[in-house]
Each structure stands twice: as C-alpha cells, then as structure tokens.
Amino acid sequence: MSYTIQKSDIDILRNAGVTEDDIDHCVRVAEKALEIAVRTGAELDMELVGRGGLFHDLGKAKTHGMEHGKIGAELGKALGLPQTIIDIMEKHIRGGLTGGEAEELGLPVRDYTLKSLEEKIVIYADRLVDIISDGIVTIKDEKEAEARFEEILRGYPKYGKNEITLSRYLGYHEEIQARIRGLNRQ
Image 1 (cartoon, rainbow, N blue to C red):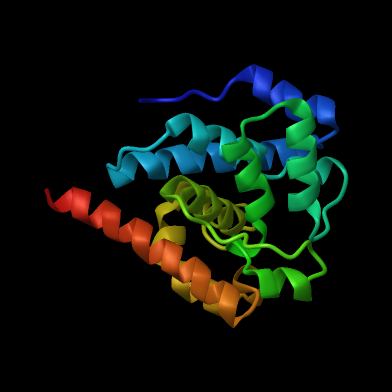
Image 2: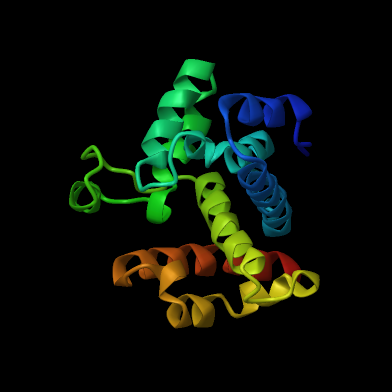
C-alpha cells in the first residue's frame, strides 16, 4: 500500500501553530520515512509511517523542549488522531525512552520504547533528516547519511546524545539497513 502526504494534515499542523520551518522538517521526515519503508520491502502500515513522520513534532507548536513529545501527544488526542500516531509523537524523544530515562528527564514515568518497525523507521528518518538539514552530508547525496550514520552519531554528540541513546539509534539503523540489504540480495 502506498501513501501520499495529505494537504489536510499539513493544514492541521499549521492551524495548531507549528512554524513553517518545523512543518518543512515534518514533511521531510514523512517523505524520508516513506522512502525508507518502501526500501525495506516489509509489509508496513504506510499511512502510519507517513502520518507518524508528519505529526511527530506537533508538540513544537507549544515548545521545542524535551516535553514536546508529551505535549504533541496531548494535542494529537484533542485533534482525534489515531492512537498509533499519538504513540509516535509521545515516544520519539531520544528514540524511545525507558521509564528510568523519562524520570531522569522530568517526563512522566512510563515505557516509551519503540515496538513497531513503523515507529523505528519514523525515528530513524527524523535523525537522518536532521543530519541532512544540518549540512553534515549534502542534500544531493542523502544516502551518505545512511552510509556514515554511525560515524556521524559518534562524531557529533548532538545526534547521539549519550551512550544509551546512541546505542538505541544504532540498533534501529542496523535493523532497518539489514532489511534493506536483505531485500537487495533477493
């Protein structure tokens, strides 16, 4: 199943107060997530991948702080978004926190770890788009962000954050790239 980003969803972001720069980021994450999802060859909920990528930063309508995931989830509930999308918004902070990590960061204590491949793809795409947008790799060679993912995360602490988060992101990278490599061998 394919999915196309809907103008009505972009309007929801705009009407919620998300800035145009943040909307551009969200659209790029959704597009990158959809592209990666197709490349994995896995049977995925492409609407969840696309809309999860698009809405992951809805909370930035109110804050760019650590709590934007929690706030985004609250806004998503008020807007009547599906729970699976709300889960992505709430869980995307640092790639899916444990309850202990959430407590350390002052967030509600619960398990934010990512379970589905769709969630992992959105978070992976978010990190890749940040690397590309920040000019670490050139836009015309976006695949370089994937090829150098570990090197970049280790070399730029703002992307890997800390050892726990770095390990989590590298795990998603390896899982997704293994699926892509497996598909390319068939």
